[in-house]
Every structure is written in structure tokens, then in C-alpha cells.
Amino acid sequence: IRVGSYDSVNIIKPEDAAVLFKAEGHYPKRLRVEAWTSYRDYRNRKYGVLLKDGEDWKSNRIVLNKEVISPKVQGNFVPLLDEVGQDFVARVQKKIERTGQNEWTTDLSHELFKFALESVSHVLYGKRLGLLLDYIDPEAQHFIDCITLMFKTTTPMLYLPPALLRHTRAKVWKDHVEAWDGIFNQADRCIQSIYRQLSKNPDAGEKYPGVLASLLMLDKLSIEDIKASVTELMAGGVDTTSVSLLWTLYELARHPDLQEEIRAEISAARIASKGDVVQMLKMVPLIKGALKETLRLHPVAVSLQRYITEDIVLQNYHIPAGTLVQLGLYAMGRDHRIFPHPEQYRPSRWVRSQSHYFRNLSFGFGPRQCLGRRIAETEMQLFLIHMLENFRFEKQRQVEVRSTFELILLPEKPIMLTIKPL
Ligand code: HEM
Ligand code: 2DC
Image (tube, rainbow, N blue to C red; front, side):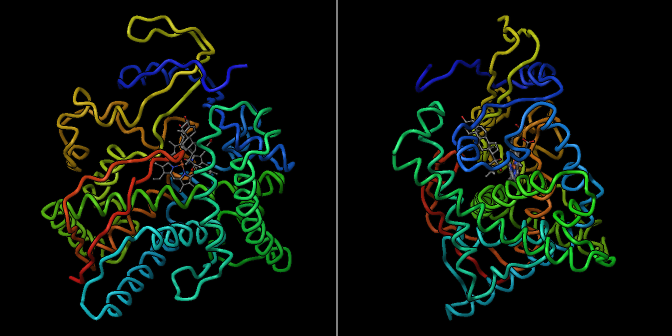
């Protein structure tokens, strides 16, 4: 066995990415996070779509796609996510009032974690957890802490073989198990409560009941498979979107003119869409560009990976089938040959001008791309709409904040923002 390394070919160019993804086969497979599979093996829990491979992955993913990422479900998600966005504004307004200074300077990350969990839970369960209230369920806060700990403890185990992992008494493994235990316990409670409610009252009515209830009623996946993937969706829905939103507010605070321009776009879209929020989301190209730009400079995933299923040629090198190829997303986003003036935060680069050919890869690509993408994009767009309609964001000192790797990329230090009512 190899300890501490694995062989891979590393690329960053869009042309190479195109070749890579053409050779990913019918069951695209990425680097396995052994700590995550080891935990499930250890606790005898099923893999969800994140960790499955082959035919089992495909059949689950096809069912999940219809309920979670197909364009037709966006209309179901919008009212649920819009409500959480509005409640977040109300919460910030209250916080500002309480300072007595008509502004609030803060590290928003903890509020954003709660916002993200509240959002994804509303979509998954059709119910509110109440995380934007003053007194929150300590179990829900514990869930958030467990996700952070889970990511943090994954990193040191990335390059250890599973045999070594499980039989080690190391503190990281113990912490990792504790973190996943906390995640699964909380998810199990949420899932059980919906399951019980559904068996008592099966004909729900016309209101959209959420992803979990839809999957249960559809009856195409086993309950264990549904539980496994819904737990992954719940866990995947917290740090990813909250950190991306924090980076976006940070960039908008550093670019006041751009912030104003986006605000103008929003108010025009608000008027033109006459209260139809789904329609409104089609009229905010700069918001969408801003989110792409955030993920270009501050990607959640440092790389994408695939095991290729056929021989390919990259940069004149012959790469045999079976090789692990990694696309360096972070490096790609900051390469001047790929993005002119990469250091500049310019949402408009996604709206017009240059080619976007294999450049917009922050959520991955193809059938194995991020399953939570539709939820994430809708949630983040609505958040920015509501926040920019109500507040101005400013930053004290113009210091550059860098990223640190805790499995996902996070700000290396707290980002302090000043929030003022408009
Ligand atoms: C997979 C990024 C939010 C759930 C992935 C992948 C990336 C990614 C790069 C790997 C894709 C590939 O290999 O091609 C992001 C980003 C997010 C985000 C940038 C937000 C800014 C979310 C959310 C959820 C989620 C909100 C849950 C609601 C998942 C799942 C997978 C995944 C389940 C595995 C899919 C599979 O293997 O079939 N994500 N993600 N993600 N993500 Fe996300
Ligand atoms: C981390 O070298 C660096 O979306 C490794 O929502 C390669 C690697 C493999 C898989 C990637 C991971 C990296 C970063 C985090 C990702 C993960 C796949 C899914 C996961 C990108 C790049 C993430 C954050 C999911 C997590 C869901 C989980 C909490 C249930």
C-alpha cells in the first residue's frame, strides 16, 4: 500500500477539461474520500449518492435528479427559499436595532450557517427548523458544529488507507466518528418525524411537501437509500452555500460601485416581474455572474477528479484508461491565460464577452455534478436579492482574506462586515 500519496495527472485548461469529461464513462467516478466510506462501513450505514459508484449510483441518482435538480422542481423550491431569505432580513434588522447605532459590524458566518441549514431543511422536509429565531434548538446548533468538525477531521485522513484509519485509535478518527454520529442522529430525527407524519396522513394536499416526502411517496428507492442520500443532502447544504455567500458579501463590500449596479438590476427585475419570483430570477444576470465569480476566486472544491474510462491525450501525453485525473479548480480560476485579469472580481465577464467553454465548473460537470446545485443556486440568488434590497455592506480595512483547506476551502480568518440599512 501507498501511504500519504496517490498517482494522478493534474490539469487546469478548459480544453483538457473537455477531453477529460468526454472520457468519464457512464458511471463517472471521483476520488473516494475513504474517511467517509470507512465511517459508513464502521457503523453499518448505507452509502448515499455521494459515495455510491457504478450501477447503484446511477439508478439512485436518476431518481434523485428528478426531485432535486431538474428544472421543473425549481418552482417548488422558490417559495420555500424566498421565505427563509425574508426571515433572514428581518433577523438582521433586529440585530441592527439592538446595537442602537443603526449599523451592525459582525462576522456573519454563524448566522449564515443557520440560514443555510434552515434553507436546505425547508426544501428537504417542507418544514422550518426555527434557526432564525432568538432561541434555537441546541440539537440543530450541534448539527452545524458536527458538520464543521466532520470536514476538519477529514483532511488529515485524506491520504491514509482505510485499514489504517479504522484500526487507529487516533483522536482524528474518534472525532470524525463523533461528528458523523451527530450528523446522522439529527438527520434521522428529521426524517423519522416526516415519515411518521406521512404514514398517519398520506394524502398531503396540494402544497409541495418537500424532497423527502416526495421521494417516499414516489416509492422508487428503498427507505434506507432515501435516508442515506437525504442525510448527505442535509449535511452538504450547510457550509457550502454559507461560505460562498460570505465570500460574495466580502467581494461586494470591497466593490461598492458593483454593489450599487447589482442593486439597480434587482429593483428593475422586481418591478418587471410583478411579484412573480420565478420570473424575477430570470432577470438577474449580474447576480448569477457574481455567484460564478465568487466561486471562480473562492471555489468550495479545490479540484474536480475523475477516473477516465478510456485512453486520452492531454498536452501531448498519452494517459491510459483507469488513471485518476484532477482538474485544479482553484488554479484554473486564477490563471490569466484562462481568465484575463483573474485577480479582478468582475461578474460581467460571465454575462458577455469571452467564451465560457468548460470554464464554469464550480459545481462539477455532467451526470456526476453537484446534486444540490439547483438548491444552492436558488438559495444563494434569493439571499442576495433580499439582502441587497435592504442593506448596504461595507468593509473596514481592505485586507486580502485568503483561503484555507479544511476539505472544502474556507476563509483563513473571520471576515468582518458592516451592515447598514439602506
Ligand atoms: C457534489 C460543489 C452545494 C450536495 C459536488 C461536487 C462539487 C460540488 C464540485 C462534485 C461534482 C463533480 O464531481 O463533478 C458545490 C458547491 C456548492 C454546493 C460549489 C455551493 C456553493 C451543495 C448543496 C448540497 C450539495 C447545497 C445539498 C443540498 C452535493 C452532493 C454531491 C455534491 C450530494 C455528490 C453528487 C454525486 O456524487 O452524485 N458539489 N456544492 N452540494 N454536492 Fe455540492
Ligand atoms: C477535497 O483531494 C480534496 O460538495 C480531495 O456537498 C478531493 C476531493 C474529493 C471530493 C470533494 C472534496 C475534494 C471537496 C468537497 C466535495 C467533495 C465531493 C462533495 C463535497 C466537493 C475536492 C461537497 C462539499 C458535498 C459534501 C456532502 C457531504 C457533507 C455529505
